[in-house]
Image (cartoon, rainbow, N blue to C red; front, top):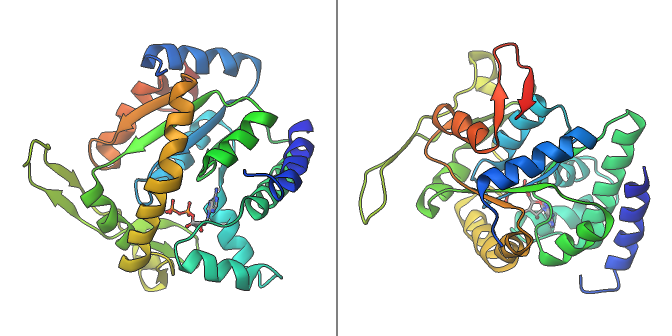
Length: 272
Ligand code: ADP
């Protein structure tokens, strides 16, 4: 796939160089048009803990494209005990961003593996995370739609601290029970915990970077380096803003509605 080679070239280049809002209906129509020609190429943006992984992964199953999360690629590399793992552990555990060069290399390899399996299209989660990365991506392929998930900041920390993964099946859960009263002009919010089944209970692990100190650092870095990526796509008329109204049962149907996607009972999907 040409995109992979172009991404690889950009990755090398990244080592040396610094790296109008459209109406919802317009964006959905654009997304629908694109799917007629090829599989969707979407991006999910949002602060740590907002639920990018949860919603991107559900949508990818519905739309039939791979969900590619650069955070997962980084954690896989970290766990592999390869030459980069020590360096990555130090960066990630301090809540800092990995260099564009390393991220482009991990992403290119992931796309290449997908290509050999016949994958096409993608939902990217956690990439691009800087304007430099967004520029590299724009130079190599067309992004159809960028979904910006938003949640009140006081809830994000609690959600990150409640995240758990089953070390055996890899399932992601959240033990936080969020119940914020209405106040200061903000509506109340209820997000029930997403509890694991009984057989995962004793195998739950917490990400090393989901401590209070590191999450606060990541939120700070998001505001500084990733927030401008929203503006990058807003100016190009590709940003779909989505305020999460609550937990998955409440938010999922509303997200599908915003995207003009139908979730039939038989799990067939149609982008209307
Ligand atoms: P979050 O919950 O903060 O969205 P992720 O799982 O997406 O976490 O990413 C975990 C870590 O992996 C980040 O804190 C960062 O160190 C690294 N990382 C992931 N994606 C990128 C990227 N696009 N650019 C630089 N670093 C990244």
